[in-house]
Image 1 (cartoon, rainbow, N blue to C red):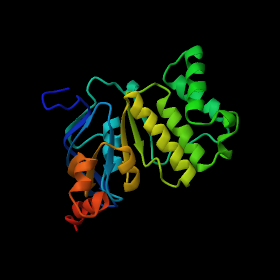
Image 2: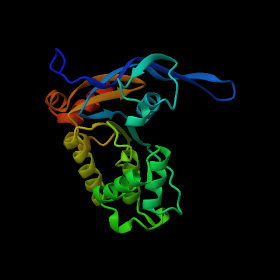
Image 3: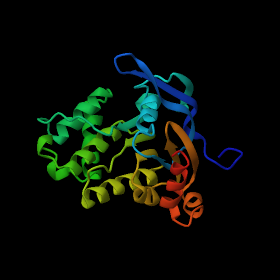
Image 4: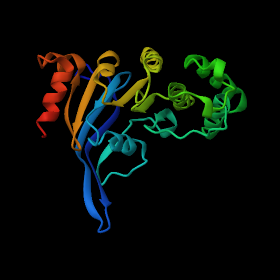
Length: 246
């Protein structure tokens, strides 16, 4: 704990800006406009905002998949080998089985055969896919693909996991399974950043949230603080913060 009673930050961003050029004439478009955020170690943090708010761009900058135009981002003493990531639209090799796919992910992290085998089998159990481990991924449902995607994000036993819209397109059973996995990560003390616009999931899973709109982090605090700040609860507060930008 630091002097404020908070845990050390697992992820922090200071005055983060990102510009891209679009169109034939290369017009500048500012996606991030000075994002300041901090995620404590061991917490599940919800990064909220409407579509186009800059959530995914923020995650990509944190991962080094995009360079910021200015500002800084830090994951403390965590190198990229200690970070797990599930993108919003992951690509899977259709003709690999779930087990083969996880072994491939493990090899990319340089895991030895024995270590890889142990982790793959454990993760298949953790995400509830042991019975489907030898089935081709092209035969997996959307929920099963999300779960195998989370498993690959955990193959390196990360201390920080970034999940970009993990609930999108899932049926109720799939959402319950993914929530169970995230709850398990929290119990293990793993830091999770959950990028989403599904407020009901945030209320169940997250301890703190940040609300993004038009490239800025407009509010950051606990779920309880947000829910208590509006007669409409968390949803009402979210609409108030976002509505200030309209």
